[in-house]
Amino acid sequence: MKQTLKDVEFEGKRVLVRVDFNVPIKDGVIKDDSRIKAAIPTIKYLIKNNAKIVLCSHLGKINHKDKEKTQADKKKNDMANVVDTLSSLLNKKVKFSQSVVGKEVEEMISSLKEQEVLLLQNTRYEEGEEKNSDELSLKMIKNIDAYVMDAFGSAHRKHASTYGVPLLLNKEKKETCVGFLVEKEVEALSKCVEASIHPYVAVLGGAKVSDKIKVIDGLLDKADKIIIGGAMAYTFLKAKGYEVGNSKVEEEQIEYAKSCLSKGKDKIVLPFDHVVADRLEEPTFVNVSMDENILEGYMGLDIGPRTIEKFSKELEGAKMVFWNGPLGAFENKLFSQGTKKIAQKITSLKDCFSVVGGGDSAAACKECGLESKFSHVSTGGGASLEMIENDGHLPGIDVIVDRM
Ligand code: ADP
Ligand code: MG
Image 1 (tube, rainbow, N blue to C red):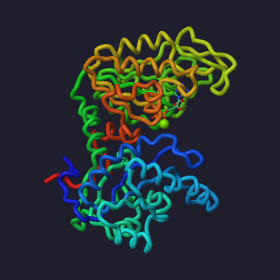
Image 2: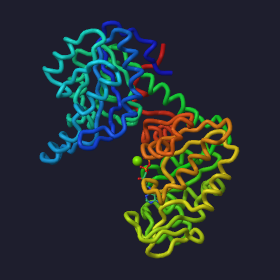
Image 3: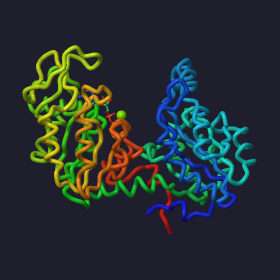
Image 4: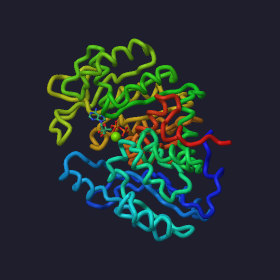
C-alpha cells in the first residue's frame, strides 16, 4: 500500500504534483479535457489543505534532435494552452511558468502563497525529462517540500518528473504520496491483475500487436478467454494460415502470434468474418467477407456480424472484462459497428466488473455514450497494459514510499 494524500500533512508546504495533462490539442484548442478533469479532486484537496501547489506534466512529443523541429514541437505543445481550461475547472486563477526549471521558477515557487496554484511548462521542454536526468531532477526539487504522483497515464515511464524527482525526495526524507486518481486507477486495475474474479474475459483490439504483445502473455495465465479483434486480429489470422489480403499485419510478430495460439489453444478467440473494403480512406467498395479469409486487394476494417454474435456469446456470463483497443477502424461509421456492439454487450452484462484501457477505446466508449456504464475507464492506455504485464508494478508508483 502506497502513502496517499490522507497520510500527509500539507499545511503550508510547497507540493509538486505530477499530473497528466497530456491532452489532445489542435490549433491551440483542447479537444478532450477528461485528463484535466481527472486531476481536479487531488488539486482541490490540496487547496483545501492550504498547500502551495506546483503542477507539472508532459504534453505531446518534443523532438530534441533537430533544432527546427524542437521549436515547432514546443510551439504546438506549449502548456500555456492548458491554463484557461484548468482555471475554469478549478474556478480559480492559475499562475503559469514559461519554463520547467531555473531561477525564475524557483522564485515563483518560493513566493507562492497557501492555496495558490502554479502550472509549470511542459516537462518535455527539458531534454533531461525522458532521459531521467539527475541534473534535471535536482533542479526540479528546488524549493519543493513534498511530491504527489497523480499522473497514472505516465506512471509506466521512468522519466525525471515521474521517477527521478520522487526518488530524490525520498532520499531527502521529504514526503511522497499518490493522488486520488492514481489510487482509483490502481484499485480498479489491481482486480484485473490479480484475476480474482471469474469468468474473466479480455477483449483486445486496436492497431499494434507489438505494443500489446506482452500483455497477451500475461493474460494467458489470468483470463479465461482472450477475444482478439481490430487490426491486431490479422497478424493472428495470418499466423493460422488464412488469407488476409491487404489488412494490417505485423509480419515480424507472426512467430509470436503462433506461440500465443499454441499456448492459449482454447482461450484465444478470433474473428470469423470481417467488414472489408478496398481502402480505409474514402473506400469505394465495402462488403462482408464469407469467412475468415480476405481476398487480395481488400482489407479487413471491422469484425463482421457473425463475429459480433460469436464474441457476444463468449462474453455472456463474464464477471470481469478488461478491454483494450477498438475492434475496428471505428473513426469511420462504416467500420464502427463491431466496437459499438461489443461495448454495448460488455456494459449490459449483469454484475460484471468492466475496465476499459486505451485512449482510442475510451474515446469510442464516449462516442457510444457508454462511458459511465463501465465500472472503470482508465486514463492510461500504456500504463494499464504495463500494469497487467508487470503483475501490478509501475515504476512511477513503485517509487512512492509505502504507507507506515
Ligand atoms: P487504444 O488507444 O485504445 O490503445 P490503439 O491505439 O491500439 O487503441 O488502436 C486504435 C486504432 O486502431 C484506431 O485508430 C483504429 O482505427 C485502429 N484500428 C482498429 N481496427 C483496425 C483495422 N481492422 N484496420 C485498421 N485500423 C484499425
Ligand atoms: Mg491509441
